[in-house]
Image 1 (cartoon, rainbow, N blue to C red):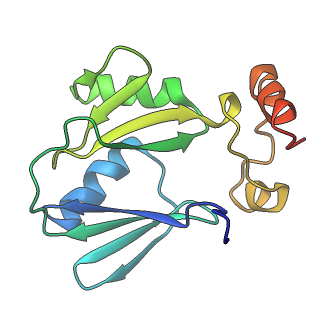
Image 2: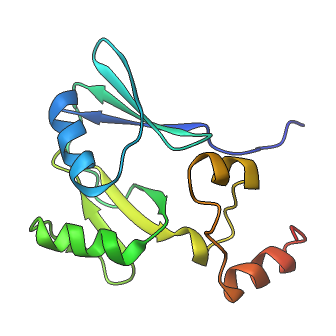
Length: 143
């Protein structure tokens, strides 16, 4: 049977692509955006986040997606400064203006790993895993 290898992208419905670009650009450094009519694709190295205009569903109650960042506490500060409500008891979770639930995780703390050439291309070649993440990688035979 075929094996799951990774996630190429996540697609989110938003009300307006330009407003979504402003919202996400106020929280995250966005280095490249590709576009098609009614869509924007935010570059994340070897992956991307697709924003699709035309939100039709109500806000998600618990369904969410996790974004990996290089500095979770800087995002927490930006979210708080913007007056965005942090939801949930553990971690850093908040909703975008269209009800999409985001969970922010720090690259240094999780098993998810980008190859050195991709990190270098993103200007993140100094980003190193913390001991617990390295232990998790070893425990799963990935180091």
